[in-house]
Amino acid sequence: INEKIEHDIKDSFTIIKVEDFHRSFSNYLAERTKDILRSIYKNDIENNIMKLYWNGVELETYKREILKDDNGDEYLWKLDFDVNGKKINGWVGLLAAGTKYGSSRKHAGFSVSRNRRMLHCFPDYYKPYSIFGQDGGSNDLVNQRVFGHLEVSNEFGVTQAKDNIVFEGNEDEILN
Image (tube, rainbow, N blue to C red; front, side):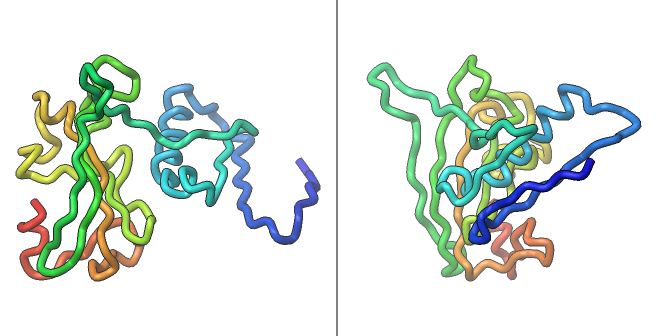
């Protein structure tokens, strides 16, 4: 297909067109791919830095629903600490029970970003051993309810692909 669409020279965008596959995408795979994209670009979507579209439909940011008490107050606690002098801030909360965006192992864990770029997000949330236990967690309440977000400072290094933190010395042991 040959298309020509004119855009303002000041606009910055990327169009990825996937077509003429031998097999079609299943609904499950399409929804999972959209969830991954929503999660990767969560910070940019929430801060109106970018808009993300799938087949011409704008996608909202990836959601995880916070549990609220009877007064409507959220079970959410701010975090601000350091690891060997390197700052980490964010929050931890509890997922709401019985909702699409709530309590489940797939929503539990911490998203992690540096310079507002997501390093850990759906489907690979950061799950410290001290909170979640064994690799992959278990099917207990903690592994279904605890979630949050951590923003690490620039003092932490990242891998060349910018998809993980490069810890120095015992930093990973302290954080875990």
